[in-house]
Image (cartoon, rainbow, N blue to C red; front, top):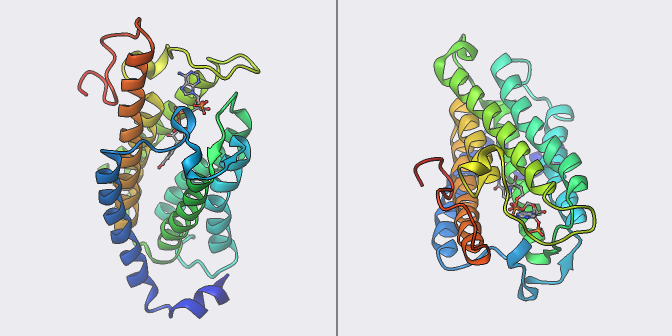
Length: 264
Ligand SMILES: NC(=O)c1ccc[n+]([C@@H]2O[C@H](COP(=O)([O-])OP(=O)(O)OC[C@H]3O[C@@H](n4cnc5c(N)ncnc54)[C@H](OP(=O)(O)O)[C@@H]3O)[C@@H](O)[C@H]2O)c1
């Protein structure tokens, strides 16, 4: 792994490359924001054959998310990762791994009746997971420096609490969606319980809070870029689903907000 990286750029250039990657992700978040004002992401209930042939949904989630663990795993265990012995770096890397171990090794196999993923969405997700996995974990394992006592700083504590709360809400909400369907069913029902009592995009709300907390704890351009990108992509999904629910179900709860409880 180190030999591959050495063939691409020198160790002196890498921090600059990692910063450029973060700013490019922020730029892509802005472009996505503009594009998503007009387009539906072509997946699930909005899937369309114009975005490539359909890929089995479990296979797609497993394969597309796997690089988000494999690339960081290789970076931490097969390259001289100078910062992984430091407590703040260890804890923030652990947050990242907790999320992706669940997302790539458990979530795909729990899906019930999910619609196939168009090849284009699948391919873009693979690219994103390689790019983001390298950017987050290379920065944390090799370059990120935190002041003495960072783990007791209010930003780290609040960020960690938000990360944990968001992660639990995300997994719980995905569980609620999953159990709406009996084995073999593929249709849609009104989600009830948990954060779905407050917002249509409860799983998205959880994930947005999760990565915002991660960014607060990690305090880097890389984590901020990921948080912004996630917020753009998932808030668009929440707005689309909310509108779709209102069109599909006459008895959809009128007081339920889109994404932020009581507010939006
Ligand atoms: N960090 C990021 O940038 C990012 C990007 C994308 C996704 N994610 C995360 O990945 C997870 C899944 O995302 P998603 O966009 O696929 O979520 P989703 O649209 O809410 O769908 C999740 C699963 O639940 C099913 N489902 C949704 N609503 C349902 C309903 N009303 N009745 C019955 N089944 C329903 C879907 O089936 P169908 O496939 O049949 O619709 C799908 O299998 C979420 O936790 C999300 O936060 C993160």
